[in-house]
Image (cartoon, rainbow, N blue to C red; front, side):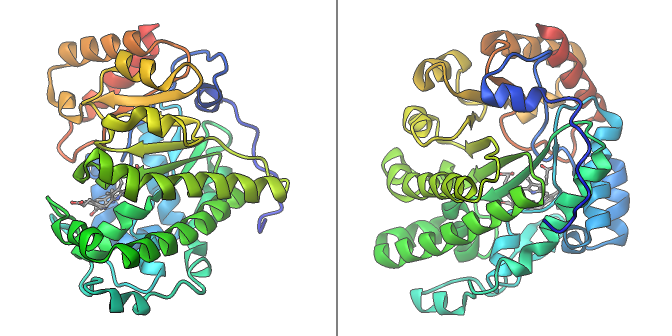
Length: 356
Ligand code: 1CP
């Protein structure tokens, strides 16, 4: 560990307790993309700094990570970064275009292009994320746990082939059919980079991890089981194995496979501590499928944040009642959207804490 100074003692560990199935004082709540464009102070900072400059400058990444915590009584922080820092570290250019999102001007088009990727040294090119995590642990003063994260292999492969976001992931899905062996090579290369990256985040001070398989929503159940599950399993197993061998305490890990509510039972068998749910999944059905020994996270529809406060409060309370106080982390079913009123975050957080 680079920073020899011990980290401050954690004061609110409800998130970690919920992840481990221990008793909580209150249902923990955090929100995917809680640092982001719905906050005017984020917009203001972004006027002066390019997106990836914020990610690469630990002081700026920490400032943005802290912004939602100053406003809301959240039970977790998540380090400010993006899933596309791995493709960048593997040698692809990634730009963030206002109003568009990420753009990769030289995507992976044919299997031959995989030779352009530079896995050697990728981890050292991501060291700024570790630096931001270590700095953030100190700045948090033990207030809440710090979550690290990564994109999952299929989701990253999708962005790298499509050259950015895509409504259909049609080029990436064509790859799976037309180049199955090269797709496996590609997914394994990404899996290796992800395991290195998550290990580094834990060493730097991440107290929990989340793996975002956001593009699972484009795959059939059969495709999800073939092209996501084996790599998701390898990520968790290899990470736990490596940490254990090095006597580094293993942190809880969340799998968020958006749109994969068809495979909750299969997801529950991968060894993750927490399964994130999107809003299409019914809490009681999810609990029946995953059994009692896994924590569930989610799953209010981000669009419900646009309802009037009373409605939002009722929906949130109802959701928490369905999930219950044990083995549950409240969140939205996907990232908060840019136009969300600030007051909705206040209502959501308060309603979760008051529900039980
Ligand atoms: O200009 C800006 O400020 C861009 C907005 C933005 C933000 C705030 C992007 C671009 N990324 C982020 C931060 C981010 N991204 C976090 C920060 C921590 C937090 O507060 O939660 C996290 C966890 C992510 C993860 C991420 N990036 C995912 C997985 C989660 C999800 O939403 O499914 C994905 C798919 C991305 C890609 C990405 N980055 C940004 C955008 C707009 C997108 C989506 C593009 C698309 O697919 O259309």
